[in-house]
Length: 363
Image 1 (cartoon, rainbow, N blue to C red):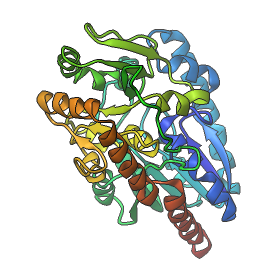
Image 2: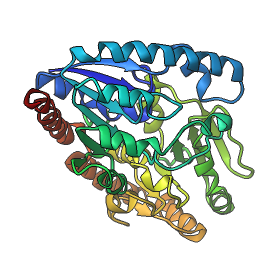
Image 3: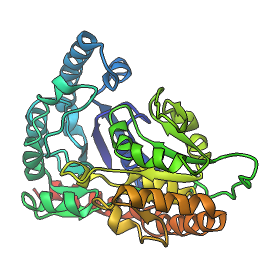
């Protein structure tokens, strides 16, 4: 089966894409699926897009990407299936999605964020007004089948298409290993967060809790995804996200953080940060928002914290107990292996692809 993958970004750069179709690819390939990736972003657009400034370069590169997308539509008829992740183009209404739908090739639409909710990006606020979140409903109607990353997203999709399957974001448990951590007697325990320039605002929601904790406890805060982060009274280490060192950078964390405000946009999140920590055996503390409450059994495989006091108390408890960190970390790893690993979910995606591809033959 030849699959045309319409994706946002170049290979190994977009988190949602990396932890969904790119991670499922080896198992799909073993099932006879050959994937050709067609990203919207060029390397140059990727370089400037998710940081502040460079407005003129961004506009020029977006225009070039639109032109490339048009040529991809012309070649789509030579494939057995179109896999569409999130949207065909970064901006604008469903121009290209409609054109893909008219090719006669079955479309499987996959989304892992509440892309139907208006959202203003901190790094590209002016472009956010051109996102057209309403096109998500159109894409659902065009699709032969919709894959949604969690129940909140699936509920939206089912309003527009009856053929919806929930497939969570997954972790490659062969690459992510839960290794025994050395005793922290001669070093401060590291509390860590991973994200990007555009999502660091979520970490900001617990700044006061971390500052309160630092008044009585010794720890280091590691922030991955932004080159600079300052928090008065807290020993902080910030670093950019790097694909080649991602697992090593995460593995240095003793306690993982996933704070989120409770909003329509964040309810669509698929808990990637938490799943990454958990797969590495790192005890994780999350806000009780969206799918986090389904993944985390509070006090068993992780912790849920909904207030400043809960964040302070649960982090303090973990800081004081290496045994608790180990026990909760191992339970988190077990959770990922059983329900959130690529190995457990990719075969389900293969079945969806096979069923959808058959509809073209029927037509």
